[in-house]
Image (cartoon, rainbow, N blue to C red; front, side):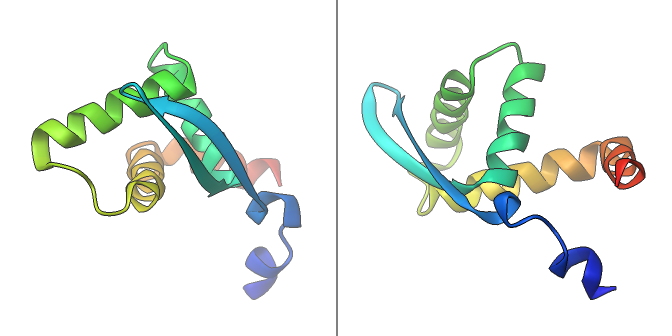
Length: 97
């Protein structure tokens, strides 16, 4: 079982920092590449660029709950919500391996 997790490509869990603007504020976000890939996919499905999607998400969170304590954690959890809502996506990935 652990081979599935331990055997993954190191590039998947390597981190990348992206600089972007969230609602006019310049910032940088550091996430593992796997999360960036999912966020890019979500943004594409929403018909937006990834920075535009993240800015929209940040705006909605501000409106709903106020400033998030940890926006990168929120992004990781958003990726999990996306995967949970799209189980066929996970099945396709598992079949491809």
